[in-house]
Image (cartoon, rainbow, N blue to C red; front, side, top):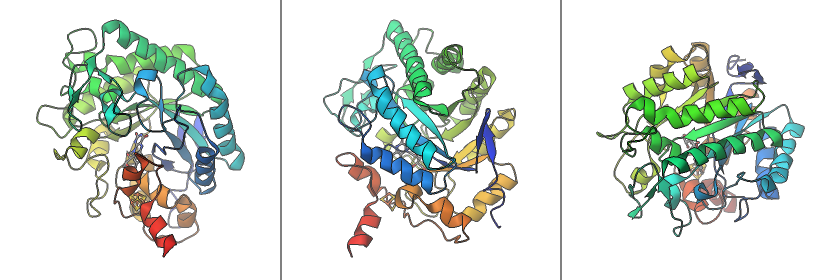
Length: 376
Ligand SMILES: Cc1cc2nc3c(=O)[nH]c(=O)nc-3n(C[C@H](O)[C@H](O)[C@H](O)COP(=O)(O)O)c2cc1C
Ligand code: SF4
C-alpha cells in the first residue's frame, strides 16, 4: 500500500492508536442548549468511528459554566453530564477500534464569537473582544485557581465517562491561550508576566490532573504557538512554552495558531486556524518543525490545511510529525480515511470555504457544499 506509514499504528502515552489519522477537535453545535449529549451528536461520532479515523478528538467541551458560551456546546462541568458522555464514548468504542479524546475548554473572551452575546466573558486581563467590541472582566487570582480546579474535575469526569485521554484546549483566543499570549495577558500575579508565569495555568492543570487520575491516562494539549501579531506570541516563545509543557509531562502537542476574533474582525491574520486558501497547505508545518527538537520522543500532531495523503505519508515516514489531524475534510467525508485506505487517494472534497463554521453559529456544523450538491 502507498500509505503504509499513515496506516501504521502509533501511540500516545500508553494508548495504542490504529493509524496516524486524528480528527482534530471540531465543535458540532449538536448538544442541547444546556450542553447535554444528543442522539445527533452520537451519530456524528459513530460515522467518524466507522469512517476509519484512529483517534477522534471531541469538539470543545466546557469545563466551567463561565466558559460555555458557544452555541450548543457540550458541557462536562458537573456530574449530570456524565451519563450522556458515557453513551457517546460507548458508541465510538462499540463501532470499531477507535480511540476518543475529550477536548476540555473555557471560551473566555472568545465567548461572543459563536454564540451568546449576553454572556459576561472573563479573561486574564480586561481586553476588548475585537468582533463585538465588548470587554471581558479580569479574573481574580482566586478565580483562576478555581477554574484550574474545574478543569481538573472535568478531566476526571471525562475519565469516568470512558474517554481514552483528554486534550486541554489552549488555542484560538479562548481562555487558556489568552493566558499564554502577552497580547492578552497583562497580569502581575503568579499567572502573568514572564512566559513561564503565563504558562503556569497549563502546568497547574496538568499537575493537578495527574495527581487526581490514573497515571496512564494521557493528557495532551492543543497549543497556540503563534499569534501573528507584533505584540503577541512569537513562535520562538511558543517553542519555549511547549518545552515547559513537555518537561511537565504532557503526552503530546498539537500546535495551532491564530485567533478567531482577529479573523472575524478582519484584522488579518493569515495563516490562521482555518485558512481558506487551497494553495496554502500544511500551514502549521513550520510550528511543528520548530517544536520537533524539544518533544523528547513525545508525539507531535500536525494539523491545519493538510490535505494530500501522499504528503501525510511522507511526513510520517520522515518523522516530521507522528500524527496528522484533520477537521473540515471529515465534516464533508467522515469516511475519508477508509476511502484512502481502500486505494482512492484523490484529495478531500472539502473546499476550505469555512461555510460549516458559519452555519454552526445558528444551526449545526454541517457541510454546506455537500448539502448543495445533494440537493441538485
Ligand atoms: C466547524 C468547526 C469547529 C471547530 N471547533 C473546534 C474546537 O472545538 N476545538 C478546536 O481546537 N478547534 C476547532 N476547530 C478548528 C479545527 O480543529 C482545526 O484546527 C482547523 O479547522 C484547521 O484544520 P483543517 O484545515 O483540517 O480544517 C473547528 C473547526 C471547524 C471548521
Ligand atoms: S462547508 Fe466548506 S469548509 Fe466546511 S466541510 Fe464543507 S466544503 Fe469544507
